[in-house]
Image (cartoon, rainbow, N blue to C red):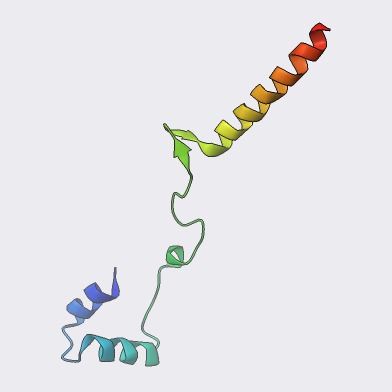
Length: 74
């Protein structure tokens, strides 16, 4: 729930800024830990639904094969 929603539910007569300051002074503001957690959301980069790490692994393998196969044929 956002602070704005909490403010509206409180039906306070104070302006929003003053209400926030009062809540901070009384330690009544609680934050969801996921808001500050770097792993809180789905932040994986993907191309065409394939995660970037798998594309990188595939490229390394493909380049490796193009280098190794010609050397094995000699």
